[in-house]
Image (tube, rainbow, N blue to C red; front, side):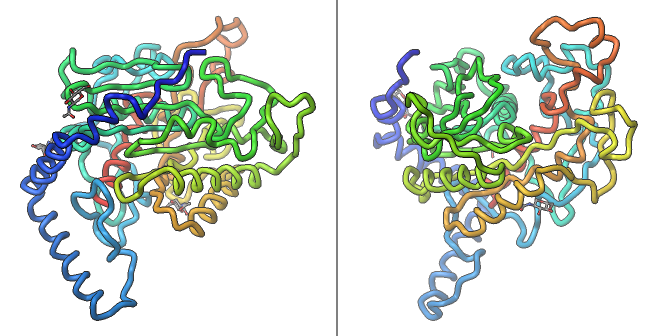
Amino acid sequence: MKAAPSRSSSPLRKARLSPYCAFTFISFIIFVAILYGEDFRSTLSQRRQIDRADDHLADRSTSRDEKIPPFAIGRTEEGCDLFSGRWVRDQSTRPHYEESDCPYIQPQLTCQQHGRPDKDYQYWRWQPHACSLHNFNATVMLEALRGKRMLFVGDSLNRGQFVSLVCLIHSIIPENAKSMEASYDSLTVFRVKEYNATIEFYWAPFLLASNSDNAVQHRVQDRIVRRGSINKHGKYWRGADIVVFNTYLWWMTGSKMKILKGSFEDEVQNIEEMTTEEAYRMAMKSMLRWVQRNMDLKKSRVFFTSLSPTHTKSTDWGGDQDGNCYNERTPIEDPMYSILDSGTSIMQVIRDVFGKSTVPISLLNITRLSSYRKDAHTSIYKKQWSPLTQEQLANPVSYADCVHWCLPGLQDTWNELLFTKLFYP
Ligand SMILES: *[C@@H]1O[C@H](CO)[C@@H](O)[C@H](O)[C@H]1NC(C)=O
Ligand SMILES: *[C@@H]1O[C@H](CO)[C@@H](O)[C@H](O)[C@H]1NC(C)=O
Ligand SMILES: *[C@@H]1O[C@H](CO)[C@@H](O)[C@H](O)[C@H]1NC(C)=O
């Protein structure tokens, strides 16, 4: 295995500390202040008023009055739940890009290239009930990343969100000014040269160390996760300015989770069994502890993308007995529809652990809005890893992928939510 590049000696790190960088950062603030003059001034004056009020009223504290989070350039209307809304058909502003115009999409997600007959899934816009999402603006995103490192950590669904973000911004960057490379096994880096900016993806499907950590050959039958081992991966995440975590599907083994207490090298492995919920709770706590110990939250932001739902049984939404996402072309319209499987108790764990924590982590609660999107999966329109048998070909339902999502598509919306939470918290 190749050695990981050392972060502390990278040019990126040095650049971040240079006076020139401070200068560009200040210029950016001014740039933003001019563009978003009203918002910015009013947030500042709001802030001053709060400071004054605080002098008189020491115990005055509502969550809205806390200091402005890093990267914020405005506010989302108070009381607006971005995650509660509906899908609106929109053929004028969607999709944000064409599949064929984004060379970074992995062949598991290029549905058009693999013969999907319709593009219906590309023309939906998420409309929250109480307000609107801010339009994704690639210029704003890229300027904010100047001299910065943005990192997605998790499984293949997070990789999809990472690629979607790269697709959303890459067209404004000249051809010779950007690159995508796998710098070592678990890390993929998209680099914007003139900006000294990177957007990266780190493969760690459990966040903790596990026997599924090989980014290429990770399809193991008997999954084992090692307790207290987040630093095995976490040491490569240090210095990131924006981190987006996810982890979920790999925990859904259908039976108890095997948790290793010692090391994978021990001759006799000390393995304990835990329920999925207990094991997941352990991982969530490790993640929050890692953030607390390793990130400067005065300058950086952390997000967690909630469970990505699957559509493996049509009966869940009142469809055919033997169907799944294959051939689905429209979202589920019933607003009360939600995944009814084990996801519910995992969501409860997330709510619980985040609720008790003081770490300011923003939840991208994509679960329900994605659960309406039975039409958005890659289904059979993706690269197949092994040749299909006659039986499979005769019955496409049997090999449809109802886990991953076509790009462009649903995951662009996840990034619009990320954009809104990052800049307009
Ligand atoms: C970007 O990095 C290069 C070296 O990699 C350095 O020469 C340059 O000054 C940096 N630019 C900024 C804006 O930090
Ligand atoms: C996610 O959003 C849905 C829809 O608004 C809500 O029902 C659910 O409780 C939220 N989950 C969490 C963990 O906040
Ligand atoms: C994106 O933001 C830039 C800079 O703030 C602005 O000039 C541009 O008009 C915006 N683009 C869109 C499509 O809103």
